[in-house]
Length: 402
Ligand code: EZ4
Ligand code: CO
Image (cartoon, rainbow, N blue to C red; front, side, top):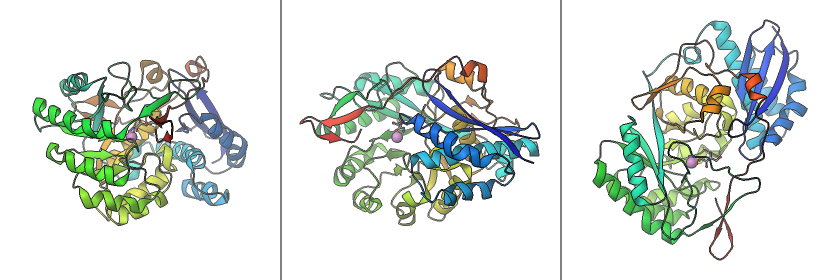
């Protein structure tokens, strides 16, 4: 069996997606996601110029060998571009293997560990009152777990506040939007939000919050401590994790569970965090972390330390990543939760899929493979449009972490 073609498809049904389609001499094909928000074309070039030529003629059944070939063989390891390109190939090959086996992917991974995948939705509002109402709407839709992000008094554009009610898309402009950040205002506000949410809805639902890398470790410890009475499911990306050891300081001060990892690429980004039990949930997902082949190694390693999975699932991860992640979530023994930001109708139409939401859970279908396809003629109707994530500055003009 041979790979006869590998094509990169770029489409923008509301936002940009990069998809790899691998075709074989036996008519079976596989699909993988390679989207890197705001840096899409770098991965397109990495794939088209440097990966695709090496794939032609290879046996698609040798997933592990091809993974090692692309990882070790490049000499230059790791990084968001490389690991997304590897992920796209890896997922397309798992899709092919599962289709050949006539099995939904979760079956090939080892079978079902659970009936459904608990997801959390994104409730947000421009102020405290609107955010409280938004959480109520998610409860009414059946969600068991809800992330709450709110506009902060005195901060013009806080992270996580969308324009509509169901969709949130931060990559909003042809050049990065400038936003202004102030940690003091944020720290004074967030505990009030969660106090209000628990007053309004009680303690029956899981509540989550994303700090989006804005705090220093000691500020993160202070926020975690202040939020303890409101029993969060997790506090996410509360401080940057390049220095993994810095999470020790956060941990010393709070028992609020910590989640991090949506920007990690390999197990090495999380090794100290996991083995020192400095986090509770690892946020790496399929597309950012070298595909299923690598992510399941991360999950197995994490299971030794009772760290559970919490796959990133924002809108910049295409339905291909969402579908694949759901198969992974259905199998992985140390599953925690799955992020679920709904895609727009245009995106869903370009990527027909068989996963479905019901009562706070997502369910994978029984279609052989990962269950997500791409409608190429529809995709061709939406050409690439440059779109960047915002940047953040402090009030004095210094650059900060968006
Ligand atoms: O800002 O995926 O938890 N979710 C997030 C996302 C990220 C985007 C960046 O492309 O933090 O909203
Ligand atoms: Co996040």
